[in-house]
Length: 602
Image (cartoon, rainbow, N blue to C red; front, top):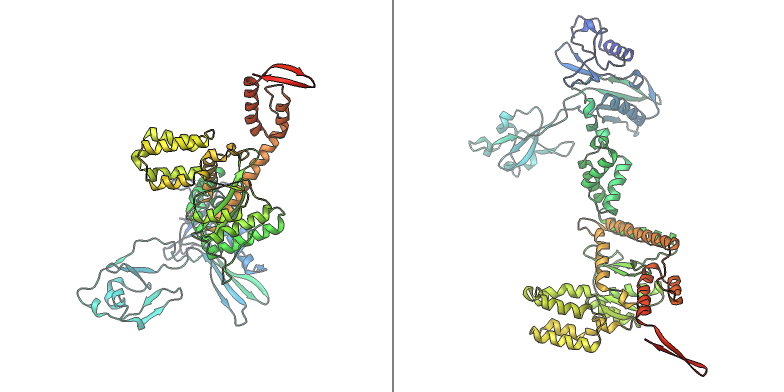
């Protein structure tokens, strides 16, 4: 701007604001010539965007950019506010319209603790520190801005000499090391290490745009406001890059936590999902880096208190929900047991819809007999009676605890775990032998086979494949009554409980809960979500059962009675047996013998 102009900076800004309000299409004014201020046209950039700031050239040749903002949003000097926070919020609303970020730069506190002076500045205020790196050590050294890098031998002590000159170090206000100007013998020699400026970027450019508030006579008021920036403001297309726009809202935080804890989805994928739901990446101010940082800070905040958080949550549920119970056992020192490298032990079964159901679960710090006994005791205390059949793996501690605590239940080994060990026990060649696999499967899964038939087939298998003396086969034969199906034919409904399908369903059910990078809070959230899904699916099947009925295939009264007693899932199995019996078994004749009748079946 020409120094002979009659317009002051404030007058120019006021004139530009008035002109902006008169014509809605005018967002900025070209101030290259001050004589054409009132008749200026809108400033259009090379991308045909109407600019939201006005450029002004000062008498010394520098440039300032003034935001074009309605007068109602501009801070006014001597305006009174209830608190400094109200001042900051008003300045932030002004900055949001003008498209720049603000920060609380400095304040002054009196002896009685009262803050009498606060300065809010543009986030690009201040001057960046120059960072010098000793390339031989690869460790940065912060140098004040007035230091001449070309004179580093006389002004900067390298990292090699730090051990010798520890007494000459001083700490800056931010905790970074600033080295005073002492000369080191190593650097004064010709073999001084090379220094290089680290390649980096900064947002600081010494911007003087600020709002100054003061406390006086019991009032907080604005006593100085300067709106000129020495840099271009953010364009309309890039307004989402502002810190205020990138700040995560409660919805974003809750979205990340819910997906990470309940659905086992990381923050990166959560950001992509949120962008798809919101209609694009421009509709979500936060970036995937912000999501990652929030997740990191959340885990850091939880820290080592995750066990206490989970236990307190369980105890609250125990107080509120009448059908829920839990118990926690502490170690001798009174702290909760170690909650990492622990074993998750669920008790699962099948319900009346032939679906997997979780009766209870435990987190055990050690796989000892005493730990399993404690868990079984609490299970029996809760349910009051024993199950008819208990299926476990071959863990020795589990076997002994189950044998001692379950007096009437029949103990069975899981066929899925046994079949998974077969490849390691017999070797690759024999395991891929189709004849061997077929005969083993016949022994493993044939529930119609009698005990004598099992003995015959087992002996033939051992002889044909020369497995006599194989330790694993000898050990499995010694406990054949715990895993061969023919030994469980007397157990009611045993045929419906295939241990392989139950184990596979259980592994699929709990696979979403496992993640080696998660803490105990995440695991509990996922387990709780999985249990909620299980209850929902059960209610859904129950509602379908109430509104639907299955047609009978015979006219027998036993089929009608079975349809009323069984759920649709089990009735379809029973119905097949009734139908087959009706086809294969029928009455040929009926002869009266006194008071009795003699029926001759076919």
